[in-house]
Length: 378
Image (cartoon, rainbow, N blue to C red; front, side, top):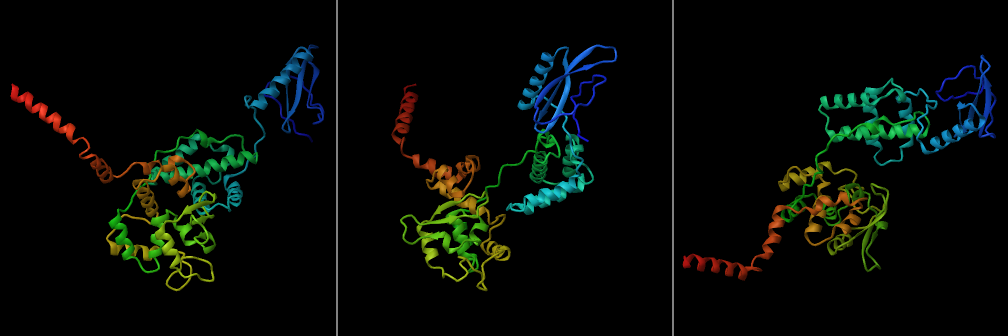
């Protein structure tokens, strides 16, 4: 039997009339038990049927139907459409399958499993803003960092948007939830002496990896997966590395300075095509132990490999590089991501401001001399 979805306006004794999609809108007359009559509109919109009281004449009913259609098209009429009673754990399986291609899949999978510990057994349509606020409170009591909670909320928000596309639900409650404040991004960097110590302290197979990070700003994964067919140093006036497996799936060209050209020309090319290899001649996949050894020998603490990227960016700007070029080299999608590198270290600021020493020496001397004359006159 055909399913009908009526406008929530009650009127008595209305019979269900047959309706076809070939007739997108019509009006029909109904008679009450007391003999009085009224007109109803009957429309289809995006596969759903809507009917309701239109007035005492056919013209009024047609106008009411047209107004409803207009409101539906502009999203202003908040009508209840059929919703499924899908449980979140079942939809989570579909959501994960749809996101298998993401480089951040492990992070997504972890967020989903964490969310299910709290919401399992609930239908998507039953989850409210209050439920999400309770989830946030629980995670904060567990001592979880705000940034981690925000990643989980972002995952839940994405799940609901996918559910809306699949017509599982009509709205996304997460969009009404305020995310937690996060501290500014970490910007730990090495000075030139520290960087030199780190290179000297590293194992032989780690030295070129560290030098590459300091001179290009490449991410660790981009370095370890680098192949010779991405390196363009022969027959070109502007040597560069072509990075195709990026975080945001956008290719970019990273220019090479003379130090990098010298380094790459000195590396033996092997049949597997990878640029960097470990002690056993296989491509490097993990660096945890040799990285920790290098830090320990160099006497450097609280420093991650990714901080070499920050070190490159900071020294690039401090040596006259502009922010827009830096954005393109790092592969950031917005200027906001590189704005932090515009704030120079205090030592650098003092070094730069000292360049003004002597520029206004004569002005300073004259002002001091004038003051001394005034004092003597008194």
